[in-house]
Length: 295
Image 1 (cartoon, rainbow, N blue to C red):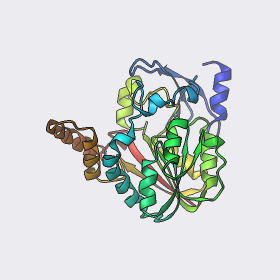
Image 2 (cartoon, one colour):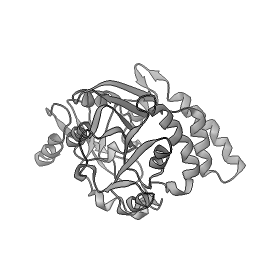
Image 3 (cartoon, rainbow, N blue to C red):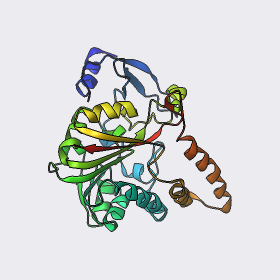
């Protein structure tokens, strides 16, 4: 990696900034062949160089028609709601009402559920296509990148980033802004892959999370350090997900086309229970959801 490239990702460091970045490998998942860098100081990983976000998040991406696609949640929303309401039940243990911001809100399914539970919903969405769909539901949506959104400070009681934080460039500014727009006592929820888990470690450059839109790769320990520096004193990491298996099973029915598909419940259940296990202090699977409360 050349010196100019190293300076770019070093300037985006959300920790001390004393980075020593070097090339790790080229990913071998799919045919993406992504250049993966690693910081020898803290273990943070990044894709660099990286594509322009505007070239990635097209209508095709949101309707399931790209090779690194996002499923069209409008088709499965009836079933996705089982997970969204189950997650909101857990969120309500920390903040049961108030202003609710979903960053990467897509078509607004989670925001609709939050509204039904008594929260005041807001969204940020990079895609003009899906942002317009969410706005038709009556939600305030900032269309564009999170760092460009003119969001008031100390305004939100809950902020969620579900499979989103890995997509965002410049984590230093991202986490600074998250801290500023969240109220004291507010809850930040981040769902992403844990690169300190055995699933990620053993997969190496073949790990399925190396995708064109994923530019930074986190671990639970990194998130704790990053958030602690910004005044998040109470933090909880849920191995796997923050909701029960039943919700996950009910959601999966959205992709079923015959009774034989119910056999997938055995695989889903096995992975769910496996995700709660650790070996030598590291989780077996890389699924995690991280909650942090701002001081």
